[in-house]
Image: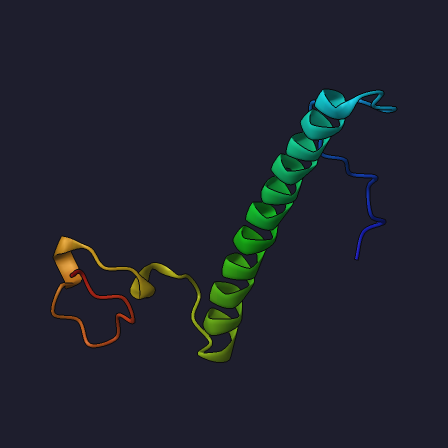
Length: 82
């Protein structure tokens, strides 16, 4: 495994909020930052799941797991178009 990089997410806010409006704005900025982090976590969990699925079934790629017009009746596809 490679050495981890220092990562950061930016948001708009105040280092030292001085009144109610600045505090509220800082809280909104932090809530936005949390949502960005949750989105990143969700994307990584989804990628990890697909990679694990491919490894467990010893597949060379993930194309068999997605629905497309060519394999709409393919019983190997785990996703179905609704």
